[in-house]
Amino acid sequence: MKPEIRSFFDEATYTVSYLVIDPSTRRAAIIDPVLDFDARSGRTSTRSADRILEAVTAEGVEVQWILETHAHADHLSSAAYLRARTGAPVAIGEHIRNVQRAFKPLFNATDLADDGTQFNRLLADGERLPLGALQIEVIHTPGHTPACVSYRIGDDVFVGDTLFMPDYGTARADFPGGDARTLYRSIRRLLALPPQTVLWMCHDYKAPGRDEYKWHTTVAEQRAGNVHVHDGIDEAQFVQMRTTRDRTLAVPQLLLPSIQVNIRAGEMPPAEADGNRYLKIPVNRLG
Ligand SMILES: N[C@@H](CCC(=O)N[C@@H](CS)C(=O)NCC(=O)O)C(=O)O
Ligand SMILES: [Fe+2]
Image (cartoon, rainbow, N blue to C red):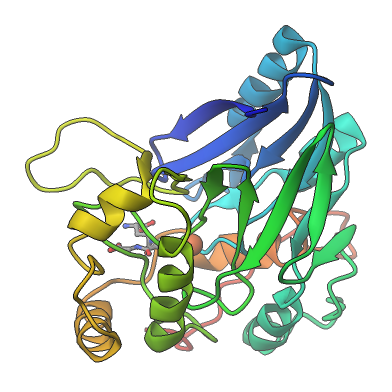
């Protein structure tokens, strides 16, 4: 039995969110939902999350899980909003604690528990979650961040930020706790899955010569043609390419707001004495 998969593309951050449905029980998981954020005004919107909720209603499904592949550094998560709306638990890789520990000092976030308790479930490599009659296998795929996980449901795998489409390559590995060598090993693990396995990306940025966004491909296509890690590229070559390229990449536009929200499972920092919530900008600490 295969899951039904609905994709939601956010062109502002090039992020793909998914609604994954077990057809036999109409139970569903939401993966990597976006909270829209206008950095100029500091205003959030649930437009993207509400599109997923509309599909939940239209499909007549019950949301069983809200899954994060990692603490995203480029967009805010709407996991907390969707948890409040659906009652479903939010799950993420257990090494999120390391990400919380890495970033807590950057924001002097004295309120922040760095034990992952903002999430309802912390996932270990190899763990299996029920999705109706289907099973979700958790695969720890660190490298882009230390806590990254991929979710495999039969022949479909949601790979987060590991691989991108074959013509774009792979995710950066220069965030705190990121590591190019570790990323290569995680990617080889994914590429050892059966060739027909369908890989679903968390982002697509198009690529030179391609005019349409695309966000799924197969293990066979990645092994044959991924510009960074096709078969034949060894670990040393990959690490050299990745570290050289990462030195040229700018800090993501929404890194500072995203991290503060996403390590809190999609909640804003607590209100200050005036009743308002604030996101901080640490001065001269990054870049
Ligand atoms: N220009 C984007 C870049 C976002 C970014 O750095 N994305 C990460 C994933 S969170 C990545 O791996 N990018 C690879 C690349 O830009 O080549 C932004 O500012 O938001
Ligand atoms: Fe990412």
